[in-house]
Image (cartoon, rainbow, N blue to C red; front, side, top):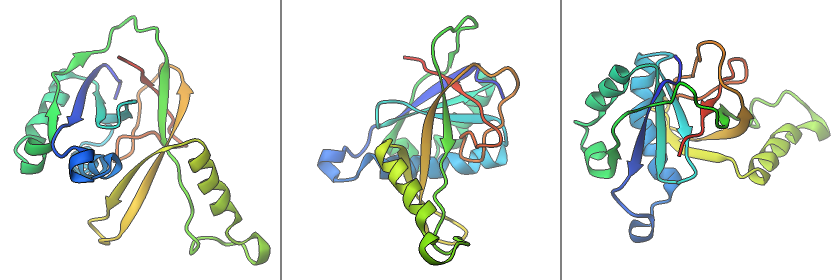
Length: 186
């Protein structure tokens, strides 16, 4: 995919102050609806996290792909009640602004740590500390396959316009072995 078109999705339903629901939980719920569509249409959609905590931005190569996404999601009652989809907008061909990569940041579990003794858990602690210090964005999600809750942490990095196609993961983010950046648009 190439980030030629984008669409903002705003969380408009339960307000955090009124309902006591953190933005990370609402964004996680929205991502739980986006993920199955992204998974069935691999390398079609990329996701950017805007500076507004209640907005996600979806990029696609074409207007038709974003229209299809809206048609797939809008019939869902939660989507209808808690979100608003803006009209798709084309990214200017001559966009010369900044670009940002949104990359999944993995923090190993204690179970996966192969180190023993004093070194056990040190990588996990370093990564947790980095995620906290950099105030990384995160989503609170629940796995449909295992029913376990997990946190998907996203690291922002400055980037450049992609020279080739982008290959997002099934959540719409860049991964370390397939990095790409998206345009920072107002």
